[in-house]
Length: 447
Image (cartoon, rainbow, N blue to C red; front, side, top):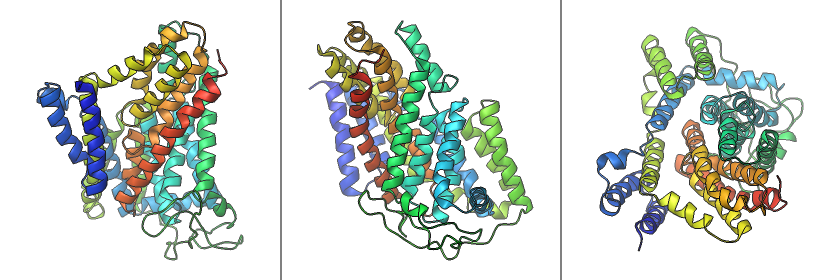
């Protein structure tokens, strides 16, 4: 049995044990990375740790630390009420506002995880206040980020268009952007309907205190008291939280925290500073000035999520170090049937991107597609668009950076349950979207 196949089988075993024995998957993945890395791949400790996502570790810790302080001093409550006033009490509009906001941020140049890190904690605080499914709100944020992620001036768009130009393939920046925008908009609409969004429209408006307004009725969603459920067949209706507080006054800690959040946005988008390091620095400043508000904030950092994500991504790094991902891609690229190779490459892009860098996997797979694209049987523009969509819509997976940020940012939820929901939703996206993208973009022969 080849080392690459062994590493894939071990990953499957990790999933099975974590699911059946309720062991933190990250801890299992660290053990698997140690065993496979040293015994199968012959890596030393430095080789095993090469895949440790230090930047993501700091982002998860820094952002959840900063927003734990914001929750403690009432800033997130203030932002929630501001959002309600912005849409005149129409709670059903808020998920779409979050979708549009993250889309606008990535379209003008923000890195997708940075946009999600800024918006997700606010969006999910709103979801907790009004009993909206956290899966609905998290998916709207992530899909919004990907909807704008391939504009001609965006980071993802610039990188992919650069790869296309380097490989001397036909390209269309507008087609790439519109393909991602429309795909994510359609998926967001499906999730909105499946997770109770339609019922939110039917309940009218709420006032600033969270009670039903003139529209009548109570706010409903797919959320349950244990952190939210979201089933496609029957979203559960629940009343608006009766203890929703009145608008929070602008005290000195709230004003300082709002200034810190604005500073985070400016630092990340305007000066290209690291979101995690900036957030943790701002959190430390707030903690020093107002220690009473932040005394419990460190304990509210999503440590189990940090362990989970860092462990799994470290194992994926071992797979990359030993060539498993390249081995799988080359095996598919060598298939003599171009259309079959195309759909398999879309699936590889989706599966690997659910655990690793979306742009990184596109950078590896687009060159693998060059030989059969050169035959002229498949349009390069459609193939690149299908790969881009397949590799990015799966960022709702809790193992991706965006999905991990959503999981870590959700307050007042059963995290294990929410993790399983994100994993199930991510699995549905991985199973369905590559085939649809291939059918719509590749089979007709775009470009």
